[in-house]
Image 1 (cartoon, rainbow, N blue to C red):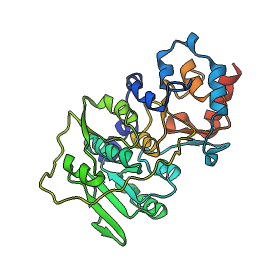
Image 2: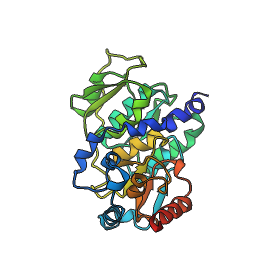
Image 3: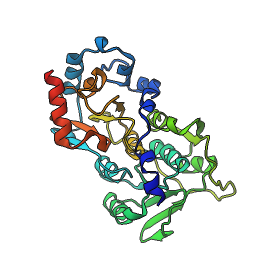
Length: 302
């Protein structure tokens, strides 16, 4: 099955990818923050763990996450969509090709809506998510077998054109070519929530219908993070759908060089002081809640 064959690719790229994350995205969140992806530019001697711990533990965050560590264990985005979005009028559902994932990411992050990569074995879980979030518009990107109409759910088949993006959003998108698969991670992390950038893979040529009728609007939703998201961390092995949902939610994604905060100062600084939360770990590589909590506590004690 294609989903299982591509699971490792969707679930995360090689470690070298994380080192290539485009750090200019951090500027949108303010250079005054001690804890940001710019930590990756510093040597261990230049990182003040006490200062990072103070910032992590004294920042304002959504009370929903108080005293919680959340670890996202699935690779399709269902769990992260459910955790980060209590409701949503729209949902993007893509196949597992790189072109569909990048296009879905472009739309989801632009409109602050969740995205899921479809696995036929998870159809019931997707249907449950649609019902629980109150989704009324399902935007299908790529080759996904889904009924054209399900009750009150309006299923929209994406034609793949740049024009359609304008129809969905009433804005003009700037196209950005992703040079190679290993760049997907960095380019997704660098998408600006609410921005209008269309990511296109240089190595795939999906079928595009340019003769389509005007597409229906996909209304933009408000940023769900309220600019008070807890620290959200990822590594190069984190499933791409979870990165996309975090950016759609509005949060900055802190890319740790290693899922174990005891490994290096950068990884430690990004979670210092958060052994009891609030913290959202976007991939299964972080282990269980108990494991990541204990590792943070051990790193803090060293």
